Image (cartoon, rainbow over all chains, first blue to last red; front, side, top):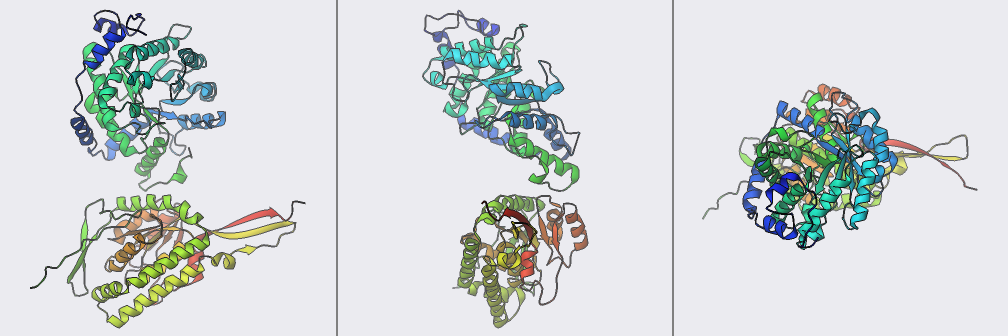
Length: 336
Length: 286
């Protein structure tokens, strides 16, 4: 889009926020007007939140909460329908030795694997409701996002048609870093429109910022605002394909944006750290950060998710330790 | 002018690194008459847990190294032990209150025993494996394979020799070990960990915990990710309970041994910590 702009249909509250149409110039003025980040303060705050000691019954509750917030993910070039079916089996029954284990929030797969995931889930599929397991699909030329808009949109529409409840899109980091905020904005709005189902409802849209490629905390905060303004239901840290992936300071920063947006408009935006969270200990730090930043209300699957694959096994091992009283081992959970 | 003594505070040896105990605890190592020798870390159950994680991740590398390579690595340790003779002898004299001659004998025997076990690395499979006769045109081969992570309670009344006698045979086959050193006589084990850290043994293959065996051993016995339990030095503990806890996850258990010939060198100590795998293969593709 050029400075001569065309106004499309972003989040209505965003339009109220802007005096006039959402143009490249307006966006730049707004986003670059956001005050800078105190990086040292942010990292200290995140480190401080990471030192809380969560033990015994609190830990047990935390572990169950974590499982209920996991987007169980497989995003490999080598994914097969069989792999997706076994992922779904694990999502439905995470620990066969303990039926009281909660189910995960969603399975996250590539778009072409959505039909297999939907079929394998069967009655456990949420199908647009809040109960059951959601199917999330990555779209828009994940993970690089380097494709034409037409391809990104059809990628998204395909996944939604196949039954995906949630779409994880990547933003065009190249456009963002070169200052073409309007282009990024328009793409998010267009993808949101592509998430529309025939009955008029929308698949949930998670916007992946790929914070590892945005270089600075200031950029991450701007990208978070941009994604929310354009209509993202969730902001997600990373694809998991770039290091560093999710870190605690970055997630804290994004949660602060969500908190500010909530104060400003009353709308609740979700946050999904993804990639690099492998241990229960790490995940518990995230729970503390969420509760302390936006409130415990956010510790629900429609407002917070972990994008992870190996995390689930570690949580199950910890859970088994708490139930049986002795340390468990990798032989007692399924192989990913 | 007299010099101030530099009292040492030793740490644990886990995953090739020297961490303090997670619990922050230490205890005093003293001579037989009660004089201070050094501070040693007092391991907790979480240190044991970390050690098992380190040992588990080291299994594939160590077990899949060629037998020849494992033998070379073990020989190299013997060479390094030889270079530290004076330190070992000194520590044994101080902590066991024995003569220099007796300490020297112990060190010599420990090094010789290490060499003896190192030699078995590329030989024990030939001796304990077998080509089984079967009624068909097939090779039927039984080969011993390492069982995995072995938790060891080292003999409590011997500084170096006891320690070497239980650790070396477990390593030969390709197992990785978590070993609880003698609580009263840990200095040789600690010095050995410094030897291991500068040798070619990959980090995590040997993990050494100091402290109370009575406190930590039950956690290792019940740990589901430990494959075998060597209770050679657990005679003074409730070792029957440990054996029962180990049975829960079908661990291989070696029972306590006492006396002067405890853990005497034998091929059985190597094979006790192996599993026999039998494979069939056609004799010809023609």
